Length: 98
Image 1 (spheres, rainbow, N blue to C red):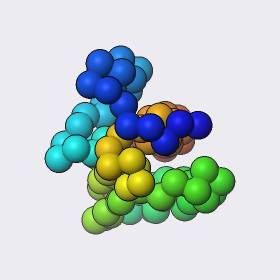
Image 2 (cartoon, helix red, strand yellow; image 1 turned 60 degrees about the vertical axis):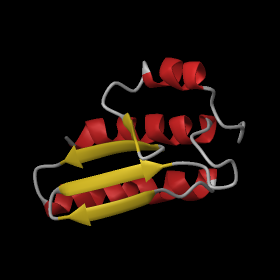
Image 3 (cartoon, rainbow, N blue to C red; image 1 turned 45 degrees about the vertical axis):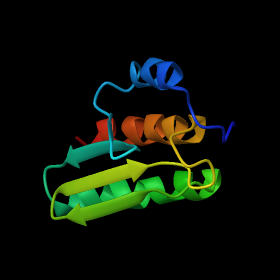
């Protein structure tokens, strides 16, 4: 998986398959609202295994039923295919819990 930062066009193309994600402050961003804290926590716990497997850790924040996620590749200084791969996996997991 490439750690090379996306060009603007490549990022726009990648975002087409992640319609609920956006770019905020140079990071791939998504906010999930689950039914309650237990569902939000289940999402985070389930995501931990895939995150470790990819060795690509998000910035995330949880309050009650909300989980906010920001992804970017520090070593590349921007959004890379690693970020969109993780976003896709997070999205698939979240859809099972929303």
